[in-house]
Image (cartoon, rainbow, N blue to C red; front, top):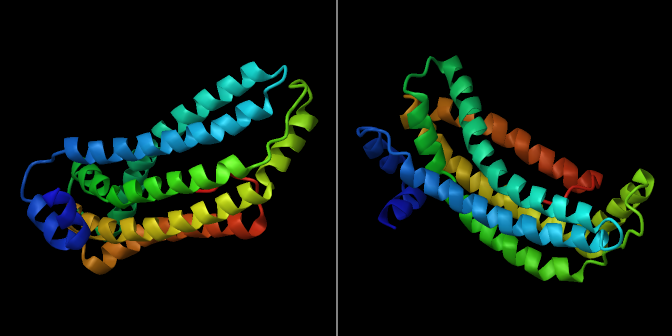
Length: 225
């Protein structure tokens, strides 16, 4: 708990001290795994809507979708961690950075702490909105046009649409908080100046935020954050 408090309140000092020691992946991995578990629970709640939609002859397909949603949500967070680290590691090479990839993994993993809070709040939002969603029921799972029409109806349901908007805003708020931690993490993991670390982190984060905002205002039927 002390380490978590230090990361949240003074990440610059925390990472300055941590860089003097050998890599310690276990605790950051736990942070990421907890984030993944919370994401998987939300994925399950979303999948339940799909099961209701396929409650007719396509019930088997609904089961497959919900399993895919849970597994995908969990491992998606792990992939985000590893791939995100790889992107930041490569971008930092433009500033002649030093420091290993494992140290980058460790420090970026600590930056997922705000995502735990984001996941918990997002889960509470899902528990409020998703029971209000009017789910269309498919009577046939063989017609792609009917499936697409039902999916569009589901995603544009007023309660689902509000859920997508609220969860997206939550995602943006907490990704900015994580970005603040990642800046100091990259600074000390790769030996960058604060300015250069901010550039490395903010480039992909801004792209991510823009994509979320585009989703909100364009009405693309994707399930929120």
